[in-house]
Image 1 (tube, rainbow, N blue to C red):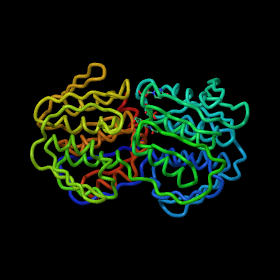
Image 2 (image 1 turned 180 degrees about the vertical axis):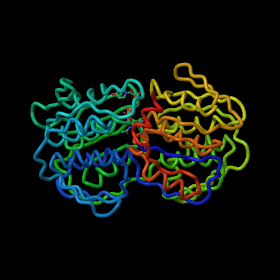
Image 3 (image 1 turned 135 degrees about the horizontal axis):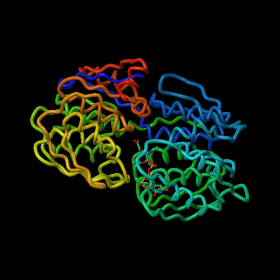
Image 4 (image 1 turned 90 degrees about the vertical axis):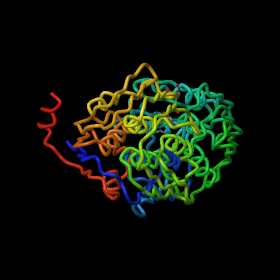
Length: 430
Ligand code: EPU
């Protein structure tokens, strides 16, 4: 079993370069299924969710060539196998994008129900509603989402999303680009990765208007052609390192970001007494004084991102006074709280609200990464804590953070990956 061992209490100094956005990459890579020709995709993050989605495409018959560390060429002109491998697909949430892409291209898709972080119920009824509005028959059986268009080609549809859903917005967009006629998505999500997917598809010849607003119109085209596209920087990876500096103190230049995408995170950190300076494609984050309490509510973009909720909680554990955190997107995203308590944090949770009473110091402890962002939050708490923290289940973290240990060690953190024999790990759990 591998873990991260962190000796906390060292402020961070230097610079960190942000990788391509996970939640854009895991939609743009399956989108290549819609394209006749070679898609060169640049700024791909090296994370396990991306490796998995590339592997799935390869199993379907895509020709994938690695150009360099962050660039791949994907050619889906000769897809021969449409059976999505069960074991791979169920490990990753984003495998649901294969439904939209395969349905759009072939009028037929059978995809295993997706996996991903356990954040409470994760229904896909809004995705299904979108596909049905475009003329597909969809049902779920034997662990598979089965979708079929009787005539072979989807027709434009009108769909109003009952809640703002990133996944449904992207999936309906994927299905609609090759449909016959116009599709309109109302109450669409506006996250930066929605705009990135639309820009990718438009650069390959699609006709998508309004991405980034709550009404997206997609006029179907006959064919998409190959091209080159570079994925945007990861908003949440950048926010995670901003929170790490806020918690541990120091002065770090976070490079290769789009500062506008970070406004919702910057605003809260500034309220908490952190100094954030926006540059053209970087933010400089500094903290030396005390952390002030604040309240945070997560919301769809441009609100404060739910994917930053555990990381901001780590910072608030060390604030002067009591903060109220409200989760506005997921039913259950506080499973990590018991782990923080091991480190001396004072947190009470009631439903979607967590009340965090700041303490003057956290103390290092063995903790568990319950999911991707909770794992990142454990690392942040460990960097700020006195003594040694060991974070296990780091495979969750590696799903979404490229070279987390190297990037943090590069700004002076005392963090390394250690391997302990499985028997020792079992004995500790027992
Ligand atoms: N929802 C429904 N029905 C649907 C779809 C969503 O009820 O058909 C509900 C969900 O249960 C949730 C809310 O709508 O309460 C929002 O869910 P959304 O569809 O936006 O989430 P998602 O697309 O499954 C993506 C990210 C998540 C991120 C959310 C919200 C990917 C692969 N995942 O999930 O990222 O939390 O959007 O921004 O893009 C992460 O990166 O750590 C992560 C969990």
